[in-house]
Length: 381
Image 1 (cartoon, rainbow, N blue to C red):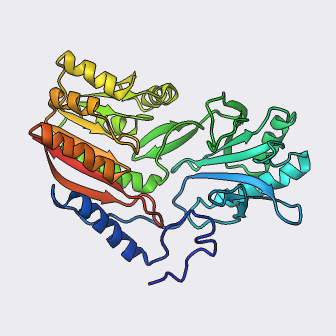
Image 2 (image 1 turned 90 degrees about the vertical axis):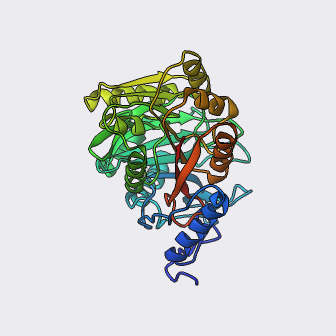
Image 3 (image 1 turned 45 degrees about the vertical axis):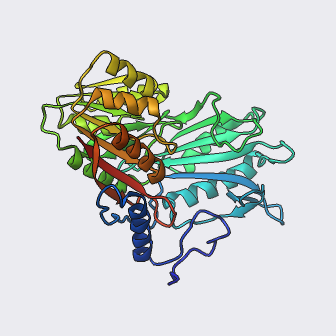
């Protein structure tokens, strides 16, 4: 059944995969997860989300229309042709107005859209992030070169027009790549270098390069379920692998004796340390290291953890991590994944080479209207 309220750009912009009713979408996601895990454990029904304006992170590219007007939107897949997007039903509501102001200021300051084919022009992309509950907005301007001399004036004018913008930074990315944010330095133009996003009653620092869940309201549902599965009593030593900005670690710290959080992104670790201090949390240790290398060393030292949380990237974990996890021998493992297929592969490894067994799998819809689904697995001996 087709949804009558579907966006008019459906199929053209490529941001949405489904146009069916949301009830049917959730049922489809449950069936998909069940097809992967039916030989392992029961699959619970997918927990649904708010559909509209759930995305707190927005990326836009810039170009010209046929009349020479500056437009913003997304590239059509496989091309450098931009689909103009003025108001997306999935993106946070203020994003459309901020992008409109940016286009207006580009004309006023003589800043040209960057051309991906000729490699000429100025502004290449803009990344926007909105803090959950704080409502602060961060803007990252990504230029194709460093020739624009009026960036600071531009940033100050943008904040004057859009008072909710708390941070404006910029980066130069002149590489011939499809990557939006490169590894080059990010410099503050106006305001703070970060915004604050709240989960439960904790405050987290979010910078331009930090990983943070895009659907913050549903993240609280996801992490609440993860804590329920972990069954923490206040006596446990907990390991949070692939910890990012330390969200799971800090939430778990309220119900655990001690938490060790491991993350290889040094900027994310620095943000996590500052967030822990601001939240008066003193029972979490943050380690800047590769998760597989760290857990291998911990297993060699015969360190003990009662519960391990892992939330790896889409590629999943690796055998080096999983074999060391088996040696570490925690009582309980809570595995959060944005890719159920690699998660099932990793759990199959654990079940094959140890006495660990998956108890249940809970799908959580973090990205309505897309094919993606997050899953939480409870694994015990």
